[in-house]
Amino acid sequence: LATQPADIAGTAHVSTTAAARTIRVFVSYRHKAEDAGYMAEILDFLSGLHKEGIEFWTDQELRLGDRWDTKIKQSLAESDIALVLVSQAYLDSDYCINTEISSFLERKVSIMPIMLLPCEWQRHAWLSERQFLPGGGETLAEHYQDAGTRQRMFLEIRAELRRQADRLRGGDP
Image (tube, rainbow, N blue to C red; front, top):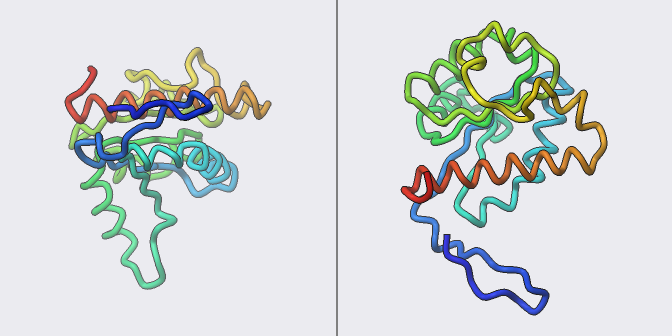
């Protein structure tokens, strides 16, 4: 992405016109209170990426009367990146695994797993063969309870989303 000159405070501005195309991120999570809470916190932190042409879709965009399965499958089909918020409840969800993950794998969508809570991730080939954040067997719930360290992890997620978007646009690998 092209940057504009720094302002008086020395902060560089990212040009929103530099993004060749919009990158669509499907946020896949389980509707358990704890999972949804992390999802809201992560998306709040990542919200500024829309200025760089990165859009997030969650099922919270569904409206009264929407055919939810049809809308979700349409968004799955349009997604470039899957931000997968992993917990045991997620891994136990037939819909998350059989519909969402199956779609990502079939379409070869870039899957970015984020480990929210302790779970049996090793029992799922699609997950055990991928890098995920946080690494080293850590989870957000266990190792990032402090707001500062959690936001540091959110910065890593943000940077990785940007790298993936650049790769999809034909920029850096």
